[in-house]
Length: 429
Image (cartoon, rainbow, N blue to C red; front, side):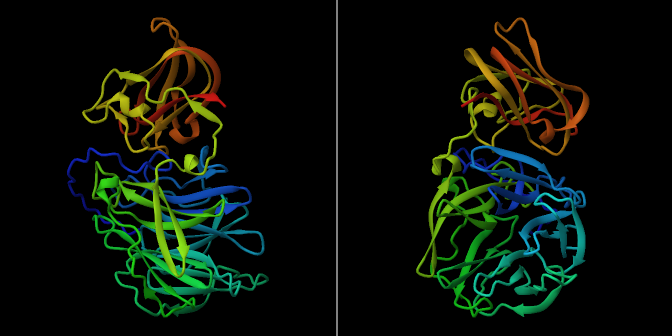
């Protein structure tokens, strides 16, 4: 999670990179399931100042359709690596650290998305909650190689917001840098962490195993379980979480943007499948399409995928075709605004929605969408050009239409350019 204001140049990569789970710079993914919904909490990344963007959370029920919304009540631009757990009182507790004082805090709220209010300053760094299935108690693990045993008295006014005891984690935790995470499976505790440095390709996921929550831990012979693999387009993977989906285990983590990296400022959320077996974690596969891997079908079919696209202007390496290639780490970008991009569907189609994925979904933008059957006469589809809106709030425009051409014009943005990961023309399945 650690971020330094450092910039490195990176050699050009012309390979298929592991496809991010969602479009945009989101680091330190902590994924939790509450009810029938999965919530992916993360650092809103892509800001070089040391602080970051608005606190957003991505939600999904099927890993094919993702929605995004604000985490209400959190301080703007200063929150790193939020992680949430539900207490036995029904409330939700968000643990995170400040990008200003590099220290951990806890917030409470009545829903997984808040509004949250600050409860206490805990200290520590990269703090992640963990419910021990053996004792039933809730701990918080810190990058300071500590376990915080929290106040587990549900009737207490400091329930889950006060540290009852700090426990030093014993054992062989080589290169224990940040991003700690605890898993319990079949009688083994797996203490996982990010080694190396987040701004280098040395960043990786290591782990050690013990029969006791506090150790002593012994690093496994196949650790690190995840590291830079440029053949797969993965650079500096780390700061992860684990979730079970349909009886299978998946590791959500961030990797560096290959164009801007090595970097601790521009990172994408990615996923790999792992298995826990006989006291070891085995990497099964990198996952480029999680919905496909799970055999899940989404609400829409994207009619624009791999169709012809052209634009009024574009930067080298960021051509219009990048906005219809189905990859969440390639984009169409211009040197200024207004600029427009047009997708030719090849023939007339009826469709139900258009999704515009902005490079920075939390930043403000003015834009409009138009459709045409002949490329001569254009009909308005959605007009957000008169008043600036945050990209994520207007990302999905739902309206039935029939057309061959769909044009998106970015009139202006906070960055004074047009930059889109994807433009999707969607038909209900």
